[in-house]
Length: 342
Image 1 (cartoon, one colour):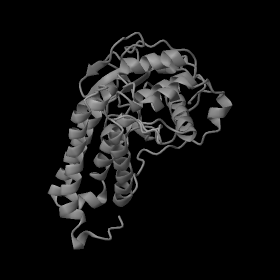
Image 2 (cartoon, helix red, strand yellow):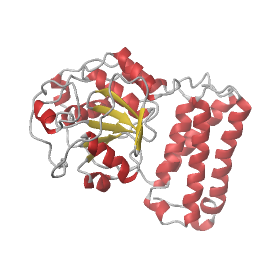
Image 3 (cartoon, helix red, strand yellow):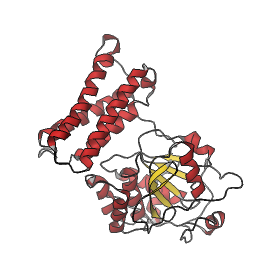
Image 4 (cartoon, helix red, strand yellow):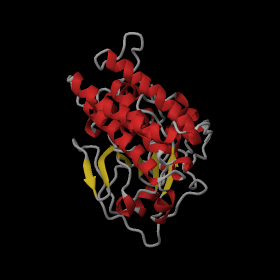
């Protein structure tokens, strides 16, 4: 489903990062850093060995987890946790982070460690051609100057799917190897759309990638709170249909992936809690959204194990429904809360 042209890292980068042992060759159309690129701190020296493409299991470091190399200098993992995570990435030589998560990146904190952000969110069901090409261009250009770190939330599913697709599209891996790296990351087999992106990727010509507009955002702004709630309603209906058919895709909607729907639901609750609208509500409102997110994540986790206990799955789903009802009763269904347009 996705693809890229090959790109490699220049000798200038190797000289700048003597401790990071990377197998590199010359760049494609080398050039000066893109405008707005963060500069390494004065006196910077890489001091942490990054993961290797030979690793058969993920690595964990201070502040980042599920860290897997898809090429020397191109790394997937979890969202950085506080300053520790960014310090670790800086010590690996990372100068660009690409987030495919829906949550707003910590741009200022990253910049304080000499790292810039690119924010290109994707879903659990994969991504379209436009987003694929954007990811390819972003990685190809950034990796000319330094290692690139790509992350979602946990670093297991979306970032792995994006990393594998990019690596195949740039000619760094063949599709089978890309899928194998996703297995190393721990991508659940139920995320068939993400696997399809990597499995169907082909190497793209440089001219195709060059034609993709650059200038990617450091923060992609999510839609308003109400629009997010509408999307939550739609996913909730999907999950109800899935529950009715024994927690498998309904015959009349075979494209639905139960674990992906639950994962997207958890993401939407998380994003809803980060909106301006939510920030103006009482603290209890935010707590309720966090509880709904946790319930959805618990359902996602159970589905990801391939659990066949439909009663247990339904119990988890009922906890999601209960959290929604409680919040609606107090904050949505009161007269003063109707007609919100944010």
